[in-house]
Amino acid sequence: AELEATIQSLKAPPSIICISETPLDGSTDVVSLSGYTPVARRDRCNGQKCGGINAFAKLDVAANVTLLHTSTEAERFWLIVHSDQGPFLVGVWYRPA
Image (cartoon, rainbow, N blue to C red; front, side, top):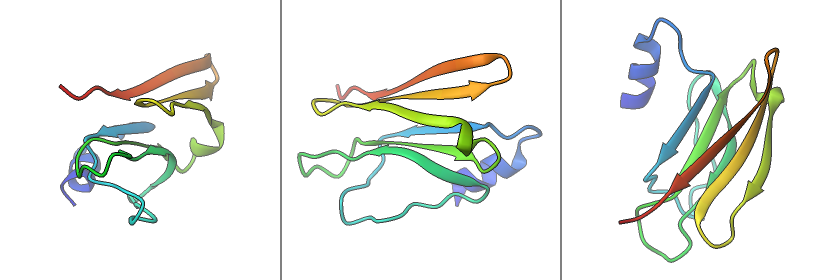
């Protein structure tokens, strides 16, 4: 709810939202964010309740986002966002301390 309120208060909401330190695991099927669709998710696989990453795209941008690679070793994935200016590579990586 706090994230959604912050996004709604922005004059220009972001096209892509990437989140780290998510408390998600395999028991959480769907995560929703108003006006966005999930495009990638990498849960922590060692059973801890922290870490993990998630990415959302605005509904009008989601068709232009491609998940390129999800790491099997680290909490990391790569997205390609196709735009009028050309493709953008977006890397999302959570590195625990």
